[in-house]
Image 1 (cartoon, rainbow, N blue to C red):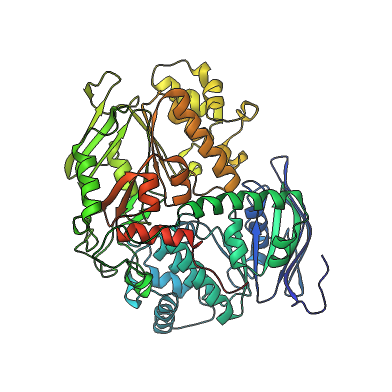
Image 2: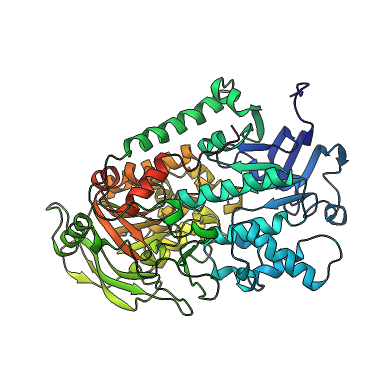
Length: 594
């Protein structure tokens, strides 16, 4: 992996990095270079060692981890096994790690501005830190008056911008962004990546972008490193590596990306299906102005749409100016869905009408007059940007939140109306690591769920197998499993009560393309084999297009369009749907780095 004479010096150079945890070798001789003041994308499937390498670079390895290898930072040797006192002179100063979930790096009890100011180095007065923090917030596209906002009052994209401002406050040599856009919709992903690239260039920082999304890495990074099973199997300039991949694993990843690209091409839209009303552009869409986003932020860690403080930012589009009633075709589709019986072959498992929800302290409703139905054996998609109200809808359907207005009616196998119970609907959350008990094995987790509904806990292994989980891993705990394996455990736990409806809330968004495809296949197989209905909530239109028969589009807490997935996604009747499709088929925002 020697440098060419024209190549910039390496900001980071690793040789033979090995990490062992709990007797298991996680990293098996990683060799890696990050050229100075450029961008390096680190890609690989779940469990390949990407994040563990990032933690080693920042001195954040788990307690008990054994580490060996050579590490040079800007030409100086760093002892990978150094104590915390040494790492404090490096981490947060010369190397900053930006985790996937900004709640990991932001203190929920402190206001955003002081957290940004505290990250600045040197002895500064309070007023100097305040001024620096306000300038940093503006630099990442946020209003300076967000200085006094708490993290929970902001959308996911806004929180990530605050975390970026804090990460860059000490002017680090290296910024490691670990899956920084995974939980965000396509438009917000593009805005955050645009921001990282601009700040990297302005601050002359080396950016290491860790992602499972090779399509994103291909567009965004100058250099690329491909991980597999704890090793780097390929490294080089992105253009050259993509054009002529040498490693079989790289070719497999590129083939998975090609499948996603094919799905995107299938969604390309023609002329607008309706007249009247302009298709919103980025500048006219909530969240684009000064980095503001929809106020009903999807709080992944809490599993619901987080309240938004009216003092934090002006709520865009408070009147719902892209409401479905303004567009006749979308309005007609909605009225047919709400009032009709739907396809003759489907009897409704759940029918919700007029759902509304406003969280305490919020200036705008998270959900407004939302009606939805899911038929037996049907896969229905729900799409919308971060903070649109998708997760609130899911939580209302299973009783995790109480609606302010509206009704939710379930029907059993013979059409009788029944109250919700575990056997009617189960929810699979986005982050299985947060929803699974870290002290319990996969087998024990599913056995507990079976026992809770009076079933035989000995069926745990069979239930895990039904979810596509390898029974040989049944006695492992969540930390010993990859992201895809953990999600299969969560699905198996949800299957334990034999529900008629499975609600998957962004259940594949944090996984690489290959694992996503496998889990989508699993969901479809479960529908076919068990006859259950599935409500698939996602900001990934390609996944929805592949899996769902019908789709609902949610915008600012309103359902603005509904219909057959092929019709809605290929000939959208509503400007907001059209914007989502065009953003997705454009591959997000093309970077200029390549």
